Image 1 (cartoon, one colour):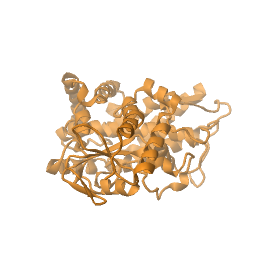
Image 2 (cartoon, rainbow, N blue to C red):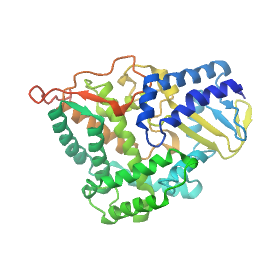
Image 3 (spheres, one colour):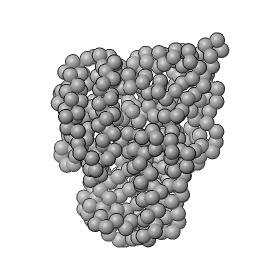
Image 4 (tube, rainbow, N blue to C red):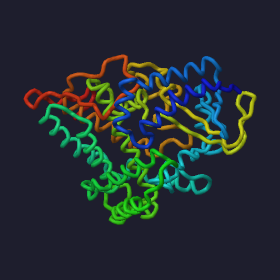
Length: 403
């Protein structure tokens, strides 16, 4: 089993892991992300992993971490093995992940193991089916309002898009009665900010109780058109925070998709997938082994933490916008993770985000797109996409649409 040198381990922590943690794993930190875009931190991280692979072979490569067994995954084959082997013997509920999620979703399926995890996973898969929510009407309603705002100002900013997208998320999860509940989003944001610190910051129990009571109120209302309708209230309280969390990531991907492929005619879902390849919203996938495992003839002990730095695998397919990779996908590209722990909301998230991209393209004419080669780090907070003025704008129908 390859063992990184002390210097190699220091490079992985200094150029890959610490910058990833600094910009926020649970919720992005605007100031840090802006700085990392200026220095293109992900480009340096990708080069670091590539150098480790060149030096040590297909790995996994063990890092020198006192008191811990940590291995960096550097081959597609090992990524597939980890994801296909979830949750046994490779559990997604790692020490670090449990420490982070306990701040806002201690009972989520990603933070549990065994039969309890399986039960919660089944609940999420059933609840997050696209047919359980009136997502298409919701997306069109909110995006139409966003289009009017963009036409009046001549620009589509992240702030405007984010506000509209959070209204979409709240309505899809709880129904239209939650549309204006911005306090729900603010409380979740504060809890997620604390979660960025994982075990280094005390839990804000009072805030979490207030947030859960707000979720409970929406769940008890059981409004038609929302995912929470007809579900056990306490189950919704435990799992809905992650539903909202997933929609937030989808909004980031959708905005970046507009920036990179603003003039494209491919389906919106394809643009979303390609955006997630170029700038994965889950930059690090973690797994923790529940027993000793064999890797290329050598054993790693139970409790080993496996680290998958997704930008390294995603950017292996190029730094240009490549919708041709989809829908088949490409080796090592895992926008929604993979295997038995693949995101249970992937179909709903992809459909709603893809529709938002399509509607915006149809009703707005974007003046330019990002230049290639595309940057490895992209600050979505700073995106401001210029659109035609109301006098010049014309609805643009995507090729192949009959409406």
